[in-house]
Amino acid sequence: MILKIINTILMLIAIFMGLKQGYAMLTVKPEMLEIFSKWNFNRTALIINGAVTIISALLIPFPRTFVWGNFLMGAGILMIICLRLLDKDLKGVAIELPFLLLNMIIIYLQHPLSKTN
Image (tube, rainbow, N blue to C red; front, side, top):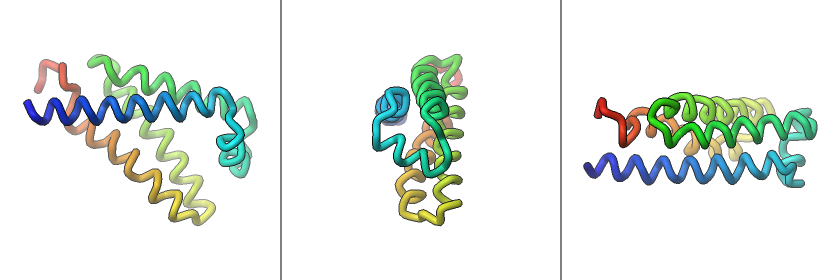
């Protein structure tokens, strides 16, 4: 029971962060454009990345799409980690790693409402 509560809290954090960052990319906030433009992302690419991030966050709460949402969000985070590694930005990688681990932990703990728990 305690694990389900912890996982629910972790899921809410992941959903909130996904919606927040996705919205910032979707609305092309200047700080997001600055970060992604150094990797040659134009406005359209940033908007698409933001939409995918929001969609992934919206898939997480539902047991049937739970894994897909976490997978999509993790893939987006992994892409950013790889881009930061290309720049040799270890501080940026260190900032992104906990978010990738969060999605992995959530998948490991499974959806709190799934029947397989």
